[in-house]
Length: 263
Image 1 (cartoon, one colour):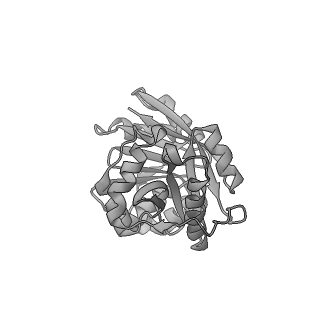
Image 2: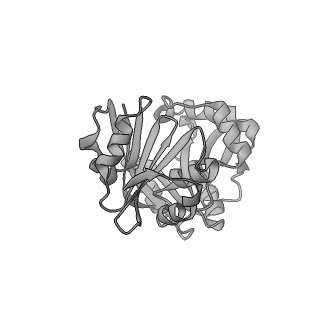
Image 3: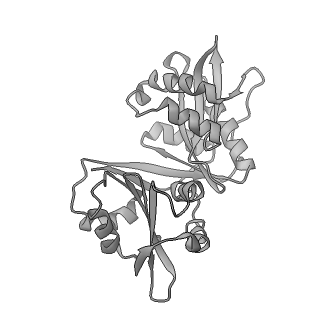
C-alpha cells in the first residue's frame, strides 16, 4: 500500500532511511530541512501487508528520489511520477531506479549513471604538511569557489549558483576547505547535503597550473576528518576512474551506482 507520509511517520521513516545514511544523504537532509508539510517537497511510503515500510519516494521540486532496499511497488511509485506534470529528474541507486524504469512513460534524455562511494574511517586520510595552509570557507567565499570550479576543465560546464553556495555555507548545510595562492583559490573541497547522519563530498579540484601537488587531497583530508569526527558518514559520486582510485586510497569504498536521469 502506498500513501503520503506525514509528520506522524517521521520516526518510522527516519529509522528506515537511517539504516543506510550514505545512500540516503539527500532524503535524510530533505526531511530534516523541510519536514513533511513543505510546499517544495512531498514524500510517499510503500508499506507491506504487515504495515512495515519497504520503500520511500521523495519529490523535491522537480526531482524524484526513490529508496527501497528490496522489492517494492515500483508500478505504484511510477504512477505517482507519471501523473506529475513538473517531473524532470529521477535519481537513486541504480537497482532501485531500474525497477521503476519500465513503468515510467517518458524516456530520459540524459540517463547518467555515476559510481557511488562512502567513507566511514579517518584511517587512510593523509596527514597535511606543515607548509600547506588550509582555510575554512566563509559565506563570502562562495563566488570565489564557484569561479575556481569554472576554471577547472572537468567542472567548467557544471550548473553552479553563487547564491545557493552562499546560503548553504551560511546555514551549515555545506562547508569547504580552501588553499589560496596570492589571494586566489587554487584548490578546494566542499560538502553538501549535510544532515545529522551523513554528508556528500563535492567540488574536489585544483586549478590546472597547480595540479599534481596533492593540494585537493589535503583539502579533502581536512574536510573528511572534520565530518567523520562529527560521526557523519561520507559519500560522493565519481565517473572518472582516476579520481576513483584517489578516493579509494583515502578510505572510500564503492557502494553501487547512482542514476541521475534528466527527462
